[in-house]
Length: 112
Image (cartoon, rainbow, N blue to C red):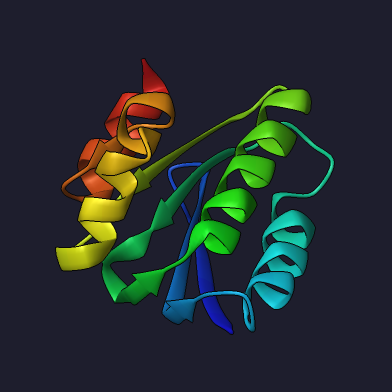
């Protein structure tokens, strides 16, 4: 699992690429948790480069959001497309974490 990451306006932007399923979720989890770290961090996970997410992937998103919150930060999602958007919506993660169209919208949502 490849995760591109950068900082934009003091917000950690994570861009996983490919599939997030049972075979890649442990790598995805390890990388997310290491990148979120132990300090207060606002985080956006851009799902535009993800073409499939399983329940194992959803679990990692939830764990990552909990870690961000536990350290005084926050986490939201952006850019889910096609079946990923459907899974995020059906699971309620769009309401729980937020699912924004663009990175800019997601960053704005975290700044409120």
